[in-house]
Amino acid sequence: MRETLRVRLGWLHSWVGFLAGLLLVLVFASGTLAVFDTEITQWMQPEVPLTQTTLLSPTALQAAAETIQTEEEQGVSAFLSLPSHRDPILRVLHYDGHEFIGAALNSTTGAAFPTRDTAGGQFFYNFHFSLRGGTQPGAQIVTFLGLCLLVALGSGIIIHLKALWPDLVLFRPFGPRPRAWVDAHLIAGVLFLPFILFMGYTGTAIHARLLIPAQSFFPSHNTALPKKEKAPPKGHVLQTGPLLPPLAPLLAQARATLHSPDGNLVLFTPDEVRIFKSDAFGPFLTRDHVDFSRKDGRLLRSVTHSPPAAATMQLVRGLHYARYAPLSLRWLYFLSGLAATALAASGFVVFLMKRRRSSGEQMFFRLAEGLTITTLISFPIAILGFFWANRCLPVALHDRMACEITLFFAAWALCAAHALTLSLTRHATSGWQQQLGLLAGAGCALPLLDYLSGTHPWSHGGGVFITTDALGFTTGLIALWALLKLREPTA
Amino acid sequence: MIMLCVLVFWSATFWSHEFLQPRTYVAFPYQTRTRLTYRVIRLLGPCCALAFCLIQSPTLGVLYWLGLGGVAGVGTSLLSAGFKQKRGLARVSKPSR
Image (cartoon, rainbow over all chains, first blue to last red; front, top):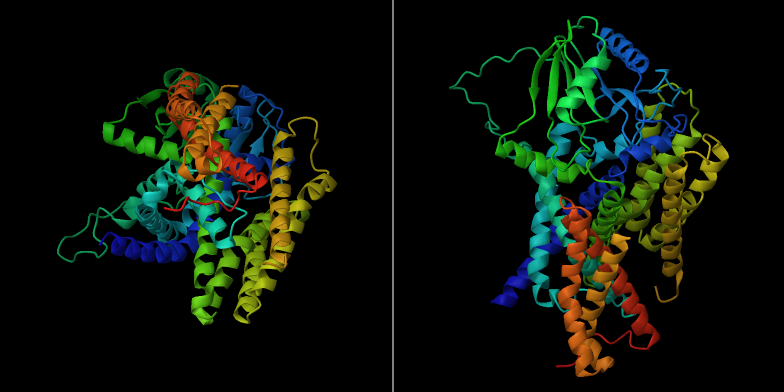
C-alpha cells in the first residue's frame, strides 16, 4: 500500500515537476536576480556615481518636486524614491506598465544624471512575478505555478521521506551519472527546503486573490454592481494637483513620526502628499505613512498601526521581497534562489535520463528535451544578452529600453528555435553543446566588455560592477565546465 | 566573523552526521568514543549555530541560521564526496543489508 502511494506520488512529482518546472525555473532564475534588482540597475546605469551620501538637500527636493510637476502635466503619475544606503540616489519614478523607471537626481544639487534609458533590475523583478504578462494572465499563471511547486515539494518530501535523514548530505558525483543527478536534486531540495517552501508559500499567498478572488469569476446578473469611480490607468493621472509645498519640512516631520531616517517613498495625489516608511526597516512591509495637504502642507493624518491580519500579510510580503535584508542576508537569499534553480534543473535532467531509453526518443521526448534546453541554457543566454545589450546599444538610442528588452526576447527566441530544431531532428547533444559554448563565451567575456565600454570608474563604488562581472564570468566558467563534461567520451 | 562561526558549526554537524551513517562508518571504522563525539557535535552544533545567529540578529537570526545551514550542507557534501573519492571509496553508497 505504502509502495503504491510512493509510486503514485512519484508519477505526480515527475509530471507536475516537469511541466510546471519549465516555467518555474524561469521564475526561480529571475527571482534570484531580482534579489539584487537595485544593484543590477546601478550596473546598467553606470553614469550615476555611487559615492553620494544619503543626505538630501532642500535644493534637490525642490528640483525633484519640479520634475514631478512636469511629469504630472504630461499625464504621468510620478513618485519619489529617496536616497538610502543601498541606493544613494534621489529617483523620480513612474510605472510604465511593467517597471518603475525614471530620472536619477543628484541628492545634493538636484541635477539630473544623463543616464541611459534601461529597465535595469526591475525587468527581472517584473519577469519574476508576472513573466511580463501583467496581472492577468501573467501573475495568475505564476501564482498557479506556485501551487504546483507546493504540490511537487509535498510529493517529493513523501517520496524521499525514508532516506531524508540518512542521506541528508549524501552526494556521489563520481558514481553512475543518473545517481549523481538524483543526489544533486535531493541535496538542493532538502538542504534548502525551508527556504524554497517559505518562498513558494509566501509567493503564492501574496497573489492568492488572483486565483481565488473575493468576487465570482462570472458576473452575477441578479445583483447590480456599484458603479466604480473613473480611475486612471496605473502610472497615469487624470488631473494635475496644485503646486507642491516645500518638501523638506514635511519630510523631516514624517521621518520623525515614522522613525525612518532614509529611503522613504513620497507619493502625490491631487490633494495629498504621502510619505511612506522605508521598506528597509524590518521584515514587515508596513506601508506606514504620514499624509500632508498638497495645498498648504499641513499634517492630515498618520497611519502607523495595522490590524493583526494586515500585519500577517505585511510579514509575508516582507519576507518574500527581502527589502529589509542586509547585504549578507540578501546573498543568502541569492544562493538559496540558485539552489532552487539547480533543484529544478537537476530534476529536468533526471526526468529526461529516466525516459530516454523507455521512450525510444520519440517526438514528445525530443520536444521535452528541446524545451529543457530552452529553459536551462537559452534563458541564461538571453539574460546575458540583456546585459550585453545594455553596454553595446548607443546611449542616445531612441526607445533604448524597449530595444534592450526586445533583444532579450529575440535572443531567447532564436536560441529556443535552435534548440527545438536540433532536438526534434535528433541532434539534441549538438544543441546542448553549441548553446553551452555560446553561454560560456557570453559569460566569460562580460567583464571584458564592461572594461572596454569604459563607462564608469573602477576605483570609487566599483564593487557593484566587479561583483556583477564576476558573476557573469562564473556563469561562463560553469557553462564551459559543463560543455567539457558533455564532450567527454562517456557522455 | 559570527557568520563564519555559524558555517563552521553547521559544517561540523553535517560532517558528523555523515560519519555516523552506516555506509560511512563501515568504510571508515572508528572507536566508540569517536562515535560519541560525533553524536554530541551533531546534537550541539545546530544549537550553537542558532544561538550565535540570534545573538547577531534576534529578528533575522533564524533566516541566517537556515540559509547558512543550506550553504554549509552543500559545502560539506562536496567535501565529503571529494574525501571519499580520494580514499577510493566514491562508489560506496549504502551497506548491504
